[in-house]
Length: 103
Image 1 (tube, one colour):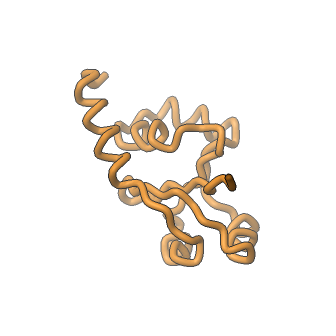
Image 2: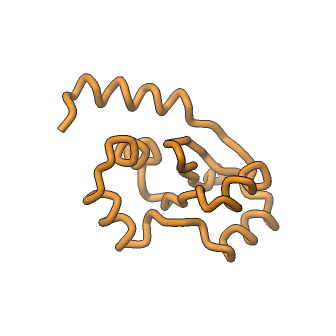
Image 3: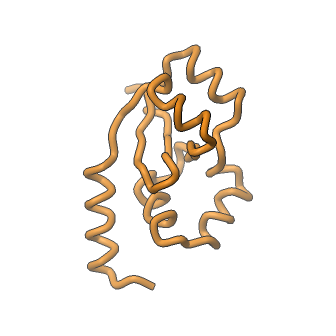
């Protein structure tokens, strides 16, 4: 397990790399199977840290709960049609995406 200071540095780095993007901009990543949907009830940065640290048990648990997983063709169509804006963070080769909630 990483030291707390290292985790804080990683979280800060990932937070700075988080950006908003329209789904249309993310189509090339989706086409390559690189987009990972993160449920709105999860903290995107916490999930990104788990991916960066290769915490397979955490990722598998979220997958089994259907809170993290590949973006489906249906979801991609819906996001494209609604011009959905998403929070994104890259953990190569993955692009983690989470819908921006309306205010």
